[in-house]
Image (cartoon, rainbow, N blue to C red; front, side, top):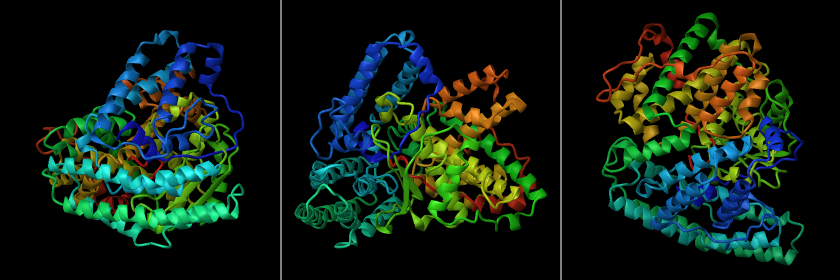
Amino acid sequence: MKQMLKQILHAVCAAAVMATVISPARVMAEENTGNAEFDEFLNQEFIDAMEKDYLTMHYQIRDYEKAGITKPDPVMPDQSLQSYQDAVQEADASLEKLKAFDFDSLSEEQQVDYQVYENYLENIAALNSYPMLDQLFNPSYGIQENLLTNFTEFIFYDKQDVEDYLSVLKTVPDCLDQCLDLTKQQAAAGYFLTDSQLDDTEDSIAKFTEKKENNQLIVIFEEEIDALDFLSEEEKTSFKEQNREIILNQFIPAYEHVSEELEKLRGSADYEGGLCNYKEGGSDYYEALVRYKTSSSDSIQDLLDQCTDFLNQVIYQYIDLMRSSDLDSAEQETVGMDTPEEILSYLESILDQSYPEGPEVAYTASYLDPSVANDSVVAYYMQPPIDDIKDNVIKINGDNVSDENELYSTLAHEGFGGHLYQITWFLNTNPNKVRSLCSNSGYTEGWGMYAEIVALSDAPQLSDAAIENLQINTSLSYVLDAACDLAVNGLGYSVEDVAEYLDSLGLNASNAQSLYDFVISQPGTILPYGIGLMKFLDLREDAKEALGSKFDLREFNTVLLTGGDRPFSMVESDVKEWVKEKGGTLDFSNTSAPSSPASGNSGSSFPTAAVILILAAAAVIAAAVKRRVSRHDPLQ
């Protein structure tokens, strides 16, 4: 999970034509210019990062020469064991330089950048300290999945980009061989995919490689080349032939080789259960993973307690809804829109009801070919180059969208007011370039989930009962999955422990095995969604309680947006200050959550008052658990 590999695998590149929006932090920065040397330092950090890897640079910035960047060789980056050690040393060196600056000499905006970058570097150093636990071929976020996204979404700005694309493509087999070499070292030490994970990875590879002449890396490339007006017909023909030869004779065989070599390692894992059960480093690695995935420094136990408290509240909300409404009828209601264009247009039209004015944007939404669609993914949004944010792209996995309501929620998550809106809004404030390197997936994916909840409040043709039912199911599904991830991978819960946990909540314990299997196969993947959603909704409820009639959703969302994606401790501080300015009081230190149980882990137990009341509804709620993973951040 090296810094540069992370940037490649993100492949998050989107766009928009911007109107001017200035955040409160930027106004302060203009009044206080702060430390010019600090800006120079961050700019050089960005340049250094871009010059390490071609794909990262291509997706992050279009006019690299204007930014003072020397284009790196168009090849895949180093994936050796040594590269992890290098990443730790580089992060530590950057931290040392960062901490040499006097924090008080910085402007308010620079202080935000300082804190965000410090947190990012610490997370990167921590994660890269455990290379033996980094599953490079994980079925959900492995390199075999993310390379397909990188190459199918590649943008050609000029002829040189086409030549560079083909050059990078040629180096994929060597890159995959490096990944295999590291994976074999991991397997020899007992660290490897479970049989179920391996099955999923092999199935995904087979789905991609079974298409030869009509492979999507050929079809999409040729469509893109035909649309380029800066190429002659002869050049187009030549590039198509080169690409076809690489895909058929190098790329596809390399993927097939990966599958064959991984199969030879089946059964190499000498541990059972969650990541914390790895014989060495498992617990420490998972703690680092949790901090990276959740944008929170809260302990695993504290996060699990927060989840439990949240789930109890949602369950009681469901009981009240069940008593007061005809849920059978409500569950049959739909938003009455069945195309991405129609839904996105509607979502864009209602933005100003809940959010500050954002930039004018252009966007396309289309469906993925099944051969390059990750089974874990419902949809993803491609983030734009930071200096050319004119085109936004959303891709949908049609096989994972079951109905109109799910398509509506999905496009709210990826589009308005989710990722597309949040990212273009922040980019429109002209933040420091280094911020494009800093991943806070708990914030970004939590924001996408939060945007789903907000959008459902304004969903057309749905009754209040139908809206609340969808919101409850969304909240419970993701937070429950996150709680089980923490319990199994962080605290060592067994299937029986998960069943006890579900039972303590009044939920159907028969779902324990499926939940356990999910979090074992994709450790940490669901955390940004469940924990992020919980954090945002808890903040909103705390602010509403503190302000009463003074609470304004549009103002509140502006506070959340200002400063961009950042650790939740910073978001909480901003919300607390906003509440204070409006005459309220918010003290997060006074919040409490019930203690967490677990066979063999704790002597305490969860509240069980809800058990009797909810038995009749337990099956309905548990069956509603969705395991959707957006690929705004493919590393998850």
